[in-house]
Image (cartoon, rainbow, N blue to C red):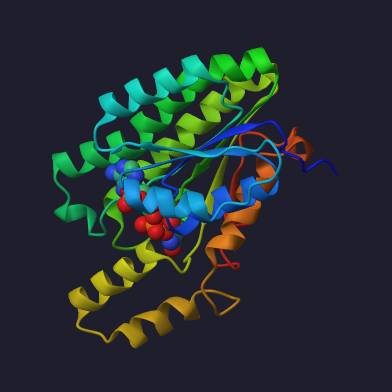
Amino acid sequence: MNLSLHEKNALVCGSTQGIGFAIAKELALLGANCILMARNKESLQTALAQLHQEGTQKHEILCADFSDTNAVKTIVNELASNKTIHILINNTGGPPAGKITDAKDSDFLSALNLHLINNHNLATAVLEGMKQSNYGRIVNIVSTSVKIPLPNLGVSNTTRAAVAAWAKTLANEVAVNGITVNNVLPGATSTVRLSSIIENKSNKTGAEIKTVEAEMLHEIPMRRFGLAEEIAAMAAFLTTPAAAYITGQSICVDGGRTGSI
Ligand SMILES: NC(=O)c1ccc[n+]([C@@H]2O[C@H](COP(=O)([O-])OP(=O)(O)OC[C@H]3O[C@@H](n4cnc5c(N)ncnc54)[C@H](OP(=O)(O)O)[C@@H]3O)[C@@H](O)[C@H]2O)c1
């Protein structure tokens, strides 16, 4: 099985912590040159220093706030005009929790900009290079809510469905060029994002953090939260030569939580 990413350039978004950082670490181990992208320069430098580096392998950082879609577009267009990006990991912070009946127009618009519009602009910027180099892998970090909407994540559920539909459509359009587009759907994964979801639930219901955690664990057949590394393993595999024939898929990595076949 060919898992080598030697001489491949990977743009990994939202990669200073959590799932994005874990993916960057895996891609670096497989030989890729990683470009880490997030808002905080110091955190980016700290993350960069922890990536595996061997031989001619070279990693770099790019500062960008995904809430400014035009700035992200300008930055990625400039990057793509200077180097071929063979691998794109679309990932950023998740939309705030809350009931859909409490959601405002602006909540939907910001979440769609953050996820759908950035994903689209990032992908379209790197596609030409992928076509020219005969290698392209786009992996979107979404959520199991693509399969079954999750309670108290109204705006997130809606946005994730839009991203999944966009990804499937894109996958079909670029498959002829050998470029794959897939979604990794994490279940409850131990990161800062999960802690904030648990805290939000505890504040809303008055239940203790431990009780909220126990309720969440009860819904997971494996009775434990996932590790960022376990989500990253799937994402990394999808970027390898070995995964060339997998496209247009939404793959749950959730300890069995999602109740669909
Ligand atoms: N953890 C879970 O249980 C879980 C489950 C299902 C889905 N997900 C989804 O998976 C994705 C990653 O989750 P995670 O748990 O790894 O999140 P996380 O720990 O909060 O990490 C988010 C990453 O994105 C960056 N980021 C956040 N907002 C940004 C912005 N406006 N512009 C640029 N970068 C930004 C952060 O870096 P900076 O702060 O330095 O910018 C950080 O590196 C999210 O969409 C999340 O909703 C997570």
